[in-house]
Length: 323
Image (cartoon, rainbow, N blue to C red; front, side, top):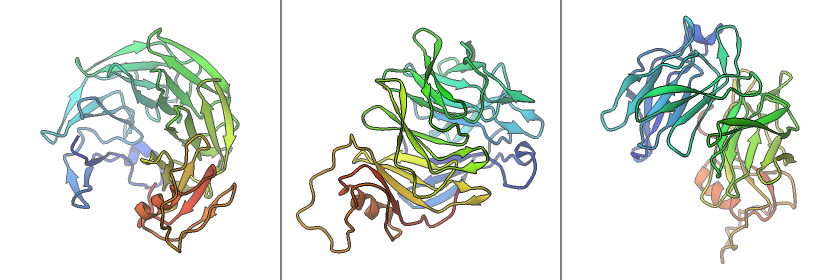
C-alpha cells in the first residue's frame, strides 16, 4: 500500500551451505525518493524463505534455511508500524518451498527441502488467526518450483518435474498438468494478461536456460515460445501496463546478471503506433529477439509497446548486477 519494496533475509553469498550464511537484515526501497534504507531485522536469520504480500499489505516470511537447518518459523511485517512479529510455525520446516496467495486471503506453501530431502506436504496460513493448517499433499515431493495463482483461484506449481501440478482450494485436491518442455529449477513464472502463465529461464541438467514456455489454462498444456535472449536463472519478472513482460537480472552460474528483456505474447494486442515515432526507434523483425541499447527501462518499455510480433526484445542493462 505504501509503494515501497521490501527485501528480507537471504544469504551473503559466501561459499558453503546457504543456511550457514543466512541473513536477518532487511532493506526497504522508496521509489519516490529513489533510495534504500535499512529496515527492522527479522527475528531469525533465514535464506530461501517464502515471501508473500497479504491482502492487508502486511508481508509473510515463512520457513527457509538457517544455521540449524530448515526452519518452520514464520514472521509478519506490518508496514504501518514498521515492525515484525512472530506468527504460528508450520508443521514442517522447509526451505526452497513454493508459495502463493489464495483468493480467500490465505497463503499456500507447498513442497520444499526439509532437513535432508524434498517433501510433498503443503500447508496454508490463515492471516486472521496467524496459524497454519495442513492441506492436501502434492502428488510428488519437490523443491525449487514456481507457484502462481490462476484467475479461477487454483494454484499452478511447476518447474522441477516433468509435469506441473494444480491445487484447487475449493476441493483441497491436486491434479496434473500436461508435460513441460523443459524440467527446470530456479525458474521464473508470471501470469499474462490473458490468464496463461509464462515460465522462463532456470537451470536444467546443470545448464542455465534461455527456454520459455507458456501454460495454456484452457487446454492444461504447455507450449514453447520464443527463447530469452540471455540465459538466466532466478530472474525477476513483472507485467507492464501494456501487457508485455519485463524480465530483469538473475544469474548465469555464479555470475549475477544486469541483463533485461521484454516479452510480448502473441495474444497481447499492440497499441496504435504514435503519430510521431523517434528516429532512433528500431523496427522489430517478424520473429525472434531484437538487440536494443540504452539503460532507461521506462523508455525501452515504451519502445517495446510498439512491437507488433510475439517474442523477446533485449533491452539495456540495469545499473547494478543482481540475483
